[in-house]
Length: 219
Image (cartoon, rainbow, N blue to C red; front, side, top):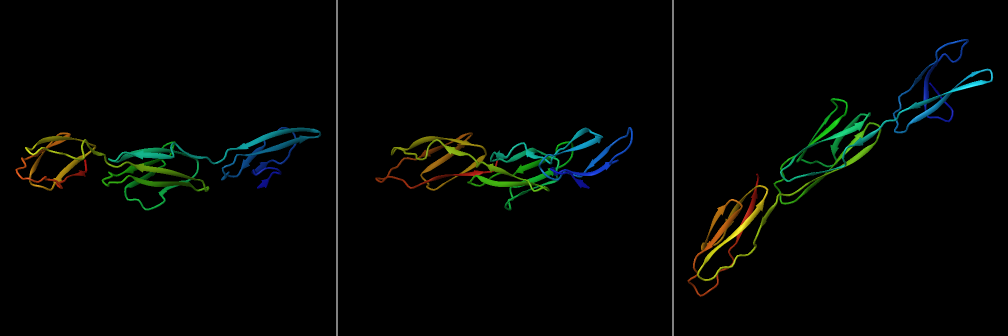
């Protein structure tokens, strides 16, 4: 092919290079594997008359519909559109067991489906997905996942010597279990709350140090 002066465009074929009378000019160009548009000009001359043909070739392109994703603690899935005319791959930058990536090139627009598993830990989770093209372009996709919510209306319960009951409200996005230490109170669980009932303290000493623990379980 012949590369034109002042241009990165490579003209693969110009047929014919010249002629007499009417005719057709066929121009073929090589593939543009770069991410820069290419332009050039072909001049056709007859004596002192010059006619110019402007030649333009599109570049490779690459973009994602989003560069950050937030999943709830229960997990879920989302599908991103990968806007490109280049070959591409997607992978996490580190080994991550709670994310599943499913790239697809079916249809007019390629997609990347991301599935997050249930977060049963006590900490939020973070990961980075790198989407790369054959032409060397990369986009880092940030993924975060929230932690399960478990909140109670009270962190300390106090009772008079004669005993009594106190109700604690529970806010959660899953199910929970209650464990306790101490044999002088009972616990009754209800929907969205539980009630602690303390028996009478017939001794001359305060009773303390007993705890009620809330353990978050899967939904």
